[in-house]
Image 1 (spheres, protein in one colour):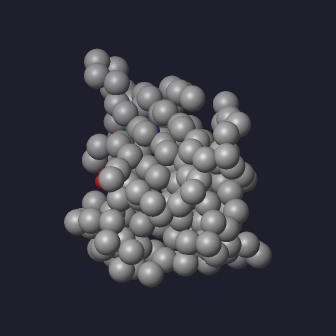
Image 2: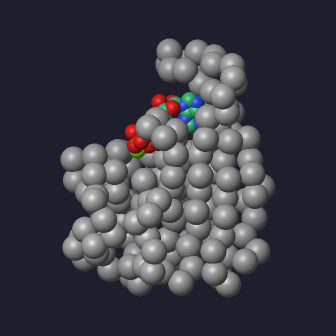
Image 3: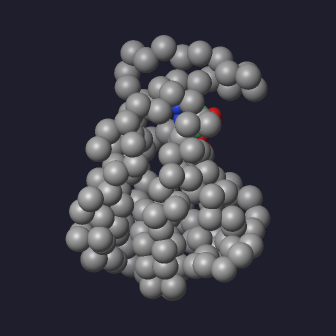
Length: 159
Ligand SMILES: Nc1ncnc2c1ncn2[C@@H]1O[C@H](COP(=O)(O)OP(=O)(O)OP(=O)(O)O)[C@@H](O)[C@H]1O
Ligand SMILES: [Mg+2]
C-alpha cells in the first residue's frame, strides 16, 4: 500500500491510525533516510497509545521504553542507526512478546526476529516542491509504502 503524506501532521496521524491496530508482540520496522519522518510517525503512534514521556529521537539511547498511561503493552522505540548488527539488537534484551516495538533504521536488522511485522518505508520523491510550514520548517510530501508481513498483517489497510 502506498500513500502520499503531505505534512508532518499527516505523518503523525498515520502513526496514530496504525497504533489502534497494535498489541503486545507487534513490530513496526521504519526505514527512510535522515529526516524522512520516522520519529514524527512514531510520535503520532505513541500519542495514540497514550504513552508516558514524549517520543523523541532515541539517538543517545539505543532503545527507550514508554509505559502506557492506561493499561496495555509498553512501546519500545529503538533507533538502530548505530547498531552494527542484528546481534547487537539482540543484546538490548527487548521483551518482544510483551511490547509493541518500533524500530527506526530497521533495514537488515530484523531477520528472524518476528513471524509477523509491518514495514514502513518513507521516501522523499525527488522534485517535490518544498514549502515552508507554520514553524518555519520545510514541509514536503513523503511517499509512504506500508507492507504487512505474515498472516497477522495479511489484510492490513490504513487508508
Ligand atoms: N510530509 C512530511 N512528513 C513528515 N515529516 C515532514 C514532512 N514534511 C516535512 N517534514 C519534516 O521532516 C522532519 C522529519 O524528522 P524526523 O525526526 O521525524 O525524521 P527521522 O526519519 O526520524 O530522522 P532520523 O533519521 O534523523 O531519525 C521534521 O522536521 C518534519 O517537520
Ligand atoms: Mg528519528
